[in-house]
Each structure stands twice: as structure tokens, then as C-alpha cells.
Length: 140
Image (cartoon, rainbow, N blue to C red; front, side, top):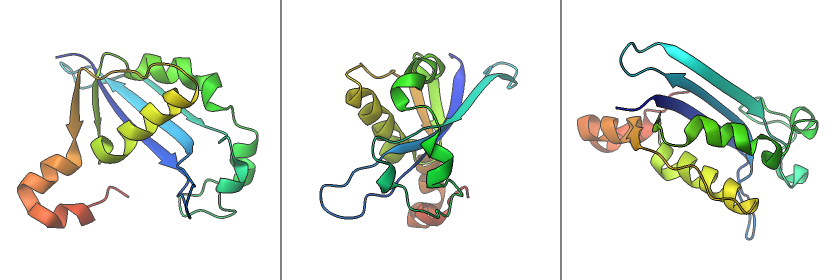
């Protein structure tokens, strides 16, 4: 098994027709699958292409002011790619939410996205064990 990267993205919430998701934060921890120890990590705030899409006060604590001076995705894309590409991706609800957001962000900058060696989605695992109730078992 390859290295496992646990990752998460925080995004804007598209409100209205024609609105879209923008990644506001990316965080990842790289884990050795044999020893289950951290071997690397990377996290950053990301300035969206449309600052007005960021609500002034968000439940995640990410503010418009905080991301206004953050790097744009194109500036951190190499680091994100290096953390994710060719590794096993792990996280909660990543198949339905985080993976599509990563692919969209790379498409926005005209680059091919990173590809996982495999995917471990805790929502899928919880759903097998707890059924529909798993949809309410968020990490936060």
C-alpha cells in the first residue's frame, strides 16, 4: 500500500444560480501506512477567485479578511498536487465533496488534477455500519 494522505478542504457555499464552490483552505497530513506515523503535512488558506463569495462571518471561522491576503490556488497547486498525487486519499465524505472540489480547482487553472492510488472515505465506511444515520455523523 502506498502512503496515505488524510486531507480536507473548506469551501464557500454557492448561494444562487450560477454560483460555484471556491476552495478557501486545504489541509493534508501524510502518513506512513506501515508505522502509522506522520511523515509530512501541508495546510494553507486560499484566496478565491471571487472574494465576494466569502460570507463576512462563516461557521468555519474563515473570514473574507483572512483569505484576502492568502495565495490563490494557482500559487499553491504544485504543493497540493505533490501531497495528493499517487497516494491513497483518506477523509470524511471526500468522494462526494472534496475530490470534486480538487478536480474543479485544477481544471480552473488548466492543469490535470492529481490522481489517487486509492480512496478511503470514512462516510462510506460509516454508512455500511450505520446506514442512513451515517450522513449525520460529521467529523466537526
